Image (tube, rainbow, N blue to C red; front, side):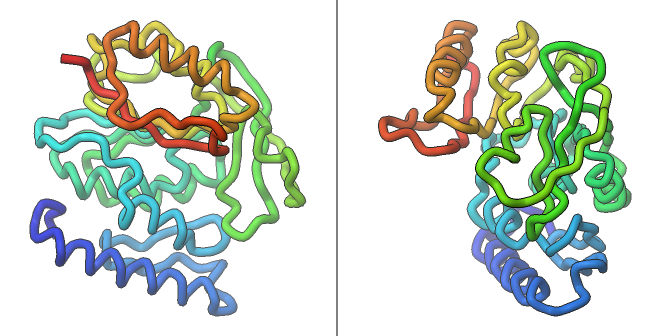
Length: 258
């Protein structure tokens, strides 16, 4: 179904799909099986429990929506996990090339299966960091959805779930993204402050950014310094900046200032 057809019909399908995922999550034995989904139409592989709340945020609340025009040719999904955001973008922009970047080996396995039927999809198994090399990735093994993994280790703090660690390859953002990106989506669990400060993040290379910013109360100075950096490079923030008391996380969108 084309994403641009009746908004009411599309959102009705999304709502039904979300409720279906909620029901499936309560059925014993489902956790180990892929899920047949009708919107988008895929056999969906996951890491534990059907991620109904993430589906709601991405498809129903459209938390990563950042571009209203149709001239989108290249999208980079940084922190793709098992591919829900990539599936959203590929249904929203069926003509765009979507590059999904994810370091968690288990998530990458699901990601490749979930996006396998899309010819406009590319998966890169690597972590994006300030420096290229090797680093430790902390991977959630115990929470319900097992979606959390990061090179910052932020997910472990104040949590009771167990985490394993694996060593993975890191690359700098400028090494792996194309010379032209229409939309860069970022959800990399605290590493966004260093990555988005990269000199390649500028309007001549990246038109639009939608990023989740983590741990705002403890990283206040880094957050506002990065906002200032992006603004000085020629971006404008499309959303109101959070004020005190700062939330733990916030999703903000940036476009080229005109």
